[in-house]
Length: 224
Image 1 (tube, one colour):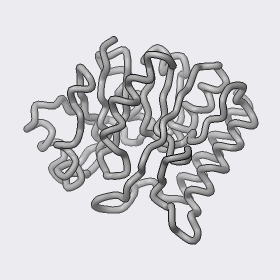
Image 2 (cartoon, helix red, strand yellow):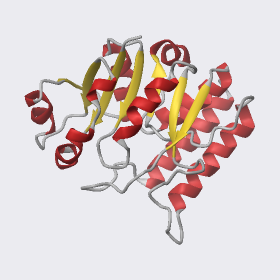
Image 3 (cartoon, helix red, strand yellow):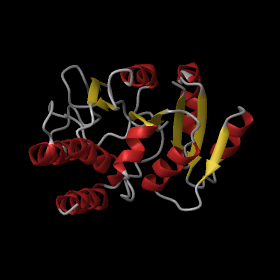
């Protein structure tokens, strides 16, 4: 089956320059960049490399996922953010897992994994992620425990993505995908991943607003 590597960007030029040669583009038959309207040269960089850049008319991570699914030519999708957190070496692994499942997630909480807050005295984001994951598993999961419902570094078949009919906004999109995969009984697999520190700049997922989105998503899914 044909695969599409989806690179999600918004003003990531310095990170992209650092990571570009490490991205295994040959793991997928197609690569597209979904950009939220970068003004730092990110768009021009990818175009200079001959990569198709699709600029979002409406910004937001949820919109980026849905736009990618509409525009991708592959039957398999993998979403990758080139900020340094995600390990490009996991791209082929996540795609190969789709031979035996509907969605595959790079987990930051499995044995052998690392999340960027490991070693901190108060890893608040990691605790919150684990809490939201636990609640989703208790509420809906009838299969193997999903350890990282929130990480956006994941692959999915287009058929499964369409079936989930996700409509969440912002960073809640990944959480909603995981919840609805549980509800639908889709087969999900995970691999341990090493989440490195962001190379340049600060995360765009601010803790309080993002946590609020997750909570709203969780509550809303109880009534779906």
